[in-house]
Amino acid sequence: MKKLGASIVVLASIPFFIVGILFLIASVSQASRILVALAFLAIATFLLIVGLRRLRRLSEISPEALKTGAIELARRLDGELTVAQFRAEYRISEQQATEVLEEMVAEGAAEREQREQRVVYVVTGLLPSMVQKQCPYCGAELPVRTALRKCPNCGGQLELTKT
Image (cartoon, rainbow, N blue to C red; front, side):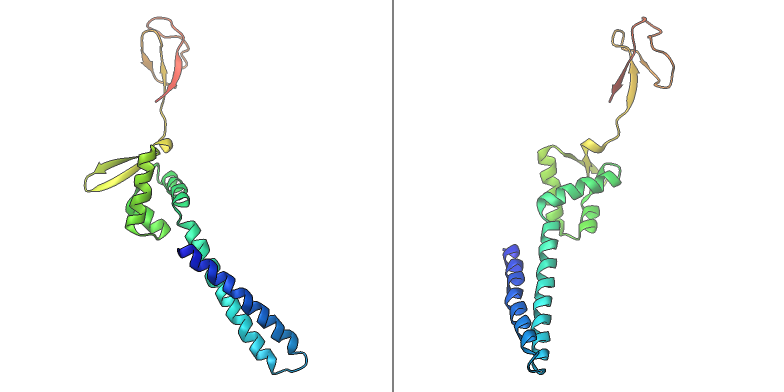
């Protein structure tokens, strides 16, 4: 419904522009009509700016855009995000921020963790992965920085695995 109202405001600016341009053309013969033309053009410009700003804001706080924004914000914050951080970044209500983050949890894109007295949402795809050098035969784990290619325990080829 909010989008409809903003669209109506944008569309309402069109008649004001048309009448303003007509009065501007008519002001060639009578100079007194230029003030009326400028008034109509000012009203049309005001309505257009207000409507477009509202439409842009509504598109910024749509659930799809907020999910994308939450992932970008979590990327900047090392994969973790709180409702307060999300609210502050996008200037949205606590209810809306919680709904978007809970929807991400339901989709499996994030996990909710209780830490002390606050809830932290961890975006699972952004967590850093650890690489280990591991022997597939005996299971020995060795530091990645070692120059070994074969397991010192059983002689099997070492594999790099992400955790």
